Image (cartoon, rainbow, N blue to C red; front, side):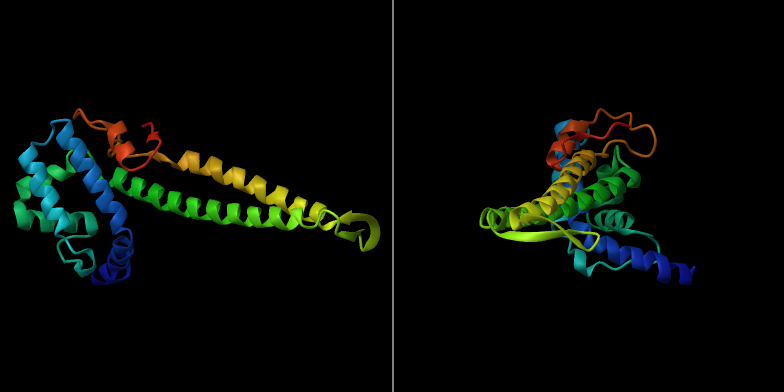
Length: 210
């Protein structure tokens, strides 16, 4: 068990700490939804929210009685505001939909970054092409001189390939930008949650269908 904790659980926990910002965004969105749907009383939601704000993620260390960050946060909250109050935060959700939502939030960020970089690259290409409409060069096929073209035409071929990749990234973003929160472990929950509300709070287009 010691080896498993050291090689698996502790390494996983350090990775989780890098994703803590996303986890706490989910906590806030979920808690606010629970309050607005009257699943959690206002005074309970305020206690949990205040306790969450006072947590210092970088100082957290995995303890022997928990296996990941979600359990650790629940344990710390329980020590601060009682296990009964802290348990309200996990009403109508599971680690499954939390994990899946964090994964999509991270992938969404990477896609946005890549889309921005490729868009900037295409803008640079357009500028260079516009300045070289009459910059002639000899193009080859199978190592033999074939036709005379322009640098703008040559770069336009690169532009088209990159633009096609950009379209695929936009499609990927649209596919990723659906929120799993509320799906829970298997067949969602019996509580009257508002999945659309949580999806909106987290910047998703809509909930992911279960």
